[in-house]
Every structure is written in C-alpha cells, then in structure tokens.
Amino acid sequence: MTPDPRRLLPSDAPVTLIDPDGKAVGNAVPDDATLLRSLGALITARRLNDQAYALVRQGRLAVYPSSHGQEACQVAAAQVLDADDWLFPTYRDTVAAVVKGVDVVEALSLLKGDWHCGYDPHEHKVAPHTTPLATQLPHAVGVGHAARLRGEPTVVMAMCGDGGTSEGDFHEALNFAAVFRAPVVFFVQNNEYAISVPLARQSAAPSLAHKGVGYGIPGERVDGNDMAALLSVLGEAVRRARAGEGPQLVEAHTYRIQAHTNADDATRYRDEAEVAAWVPRDPITRLRAYLQDRGVLTAETETAFSEAAERAAGHLRDGLNRDITPNPQDLFAYVYERPTSQLREQEALIADELSREGAL
Ligand SMILES: Cc1ncc(C[n+]2csc(CCOP(=O)(O)OP(=O)(O)O)c2C)c(N)n1
Image (cartoon, rainbow, N blue to C red; front, side):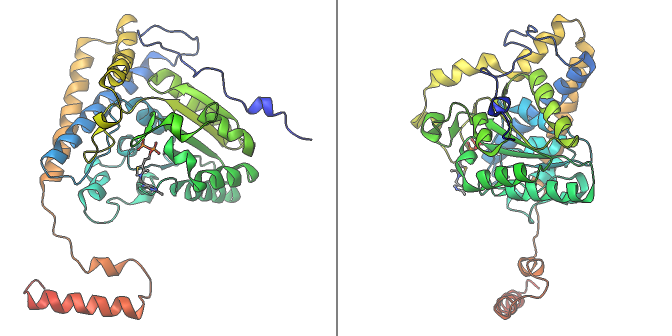
C-alpha cells in the first residue's frame, strides 16, 4: 500500500516551545534540570566560538566558520545522542563535536592546518569534519545501515547546511536511508545563506524539510534558536530512529550572525539591518530569560557557567598557541596500506631534500 504522503509533511510553522521573549508557548518544554545543563553548554559554546574567531585574527587558526548564533542547534544535536551514537559534522559544527566529547584543541587541529582530522573519530563517535559539502551524508547513512544490519541500537546524526541540501550527495543519502530504513537523523541548519547565496536563490521548495517527502522521509521544522524545541524535535527523531522507524529530516531555522568565515565580507551581500533583526532572537538570551523567570537560574550558577566557559577558552588558547612540528613524511604514511611506486618515489625525494637541509 502506498503510504499517505501527508504523514510525511512538516508543520506549517517551525516548532517553538519558548518564544524569543523567554515565554513558554508549548506544553512539552523539557524539565528545568535539562535546560540548565543546556544553558551551561550554550554559554561555553558561545565563548569557544568567539575565542576561535579571535585566534584566527591572531594567526593561530587558518580559518574558522563560526556557529555564533547557531549554538542551540550545535548543543542540541549532540545532547540528544547517546555515547554510542554517531555524529557527522560539517566544518561549521566544531561546537557539536565538542559537546559530543571531542577536545576542542583536537577538534580545531584540522583548521589549524595540523595533522589530519586531529582526533580519533572512534573515541567519541564523531566523524571527521567535512568541508566538501554533503559528502559526509552517504557515509553517515552507511554507518547507520551497518549498525542496523548488526542489530546495534546506534543512531546517526548527519548534519548539513541549507546549501548542502542542493548537493547530489544529500539526495542520494536520503534515498538510500529511506529505502533501507537506516537510523539516521538528517539535521539541516538553515542559516539563510550559503556564503553569499540567500535561501531564495538556493531552493524553491516550500521548506527544506519538505525535501524528505519525495524520498518517503518525514520532515519537521523547528525554531533553531529555541533550545527547548530543538531538544524535543531532535530527541523525538532520535527515539524514532532507534525504535526502527527509519530516518527523519529536521530543518532548523536559524541565522549565521557572522560572516561565512574570516575570508568573507558579508556586508557585500546582506544588510546590517537584517543581521540586527536576528540578534534579539539569540538562543542564549531566550533560554536565560525563561530559566530566570522560573526562578531556577541563580547568580551562583551563572558564575559557575561563565567560569567553565573561561576555562574552556583558556584551554583552547593554550592548545592553539603551542607550535607543532609535523613530519612531512606523514603525508605518505596513512594513505595506502601499500603505497604506489609514484608515492614511494615522492617520499624518497622529500627524504633526500630534508636530509640535505639537515632536517632529518
Ligand atoms: C562540493 C562543494 N562545493 C562547493 C564548496 C564551497 N563551499 C564551501 S562552504 C559553501 C556554502 C555552504 O553553505 P551551507 O551548506 O548553507 O552551510 P553554511 O556554510 O551556511 O553552514 C560552499 C559553496 C564546497 N566546500 N564543497
């Protein structure tokens, strides 16, 4: 029997549980203890974003695509997962990787130009950050499919941006996941821009969450600056995937407050007024107002959160200020089990050059 496509459609408006003024607008708001934990993570996340941005200007990082303003998406994506679930991040998702357990210094090694991906993906079940758009999505589906074949309860959170949804890999990943009921949550952070390309030039779909319908995947839309709504919608998608109900597509509506990276001048393609309109919708301000209103956020807790954030920023600064001495021959060590004759030749050439410079 053909499934009823109406059950695949997202809500007419993004799900919101706490409005921008910090007032509850739904009755499914997570409990105070959960939200307090998330607020602590959000405050550290913002501090790490801003510290990393500063480290670019100091020349300690080559580039940093900041998730400033998108921290609720970052924190929620990791907090709804169990330790054995996998996260597949993009270049903008360093914070999600850190919340899942990766040391922030290791997480940023790649963007420093250091050794490979910087961390062991298996340790915290976080795949390497992917810069080529959407190429991580078929890999994520493969991990989910394999886990299902082995009878493991693993769920995979596969992240991408609005621009990523135009890539062929996005569509191939959704199709395969749907046919094989892979336990994957496709999580799109729609931050309105793919570098200078606004959403209106990216897609004519009613919403990005509607893109699931053609593949038989249910879609949902969520306010990406509402921590409570994200925990609820992503948590439910994870629960369903784990229960064998197949993949889901979640689109979070958020905004990239800063430029794409330090190499981008966002003033060339968007108005300051547009950015300013998003500032009062900040995820931290909103959650803080809600928890203060409920009387559960004390001055001591606020101090503890900001001290933890400062410690994390200090750890990041110390780590990235340490100089590294990469061995150029590592380039050849881990690509093939049996290197090709051309690679062996190149390796010998470099060894010869380095020995003549006295570097070996
Ligand atoms: C396959 C591929 N094509 C082009 C690029 C160049 N590129 C890097 S980031 C980017 C924009 C991506 O936008 P989006 O998916 O919305 O993510 P965001 O950067 O907003 O988080 C583009 C086109 C790339 N990295 N990979």
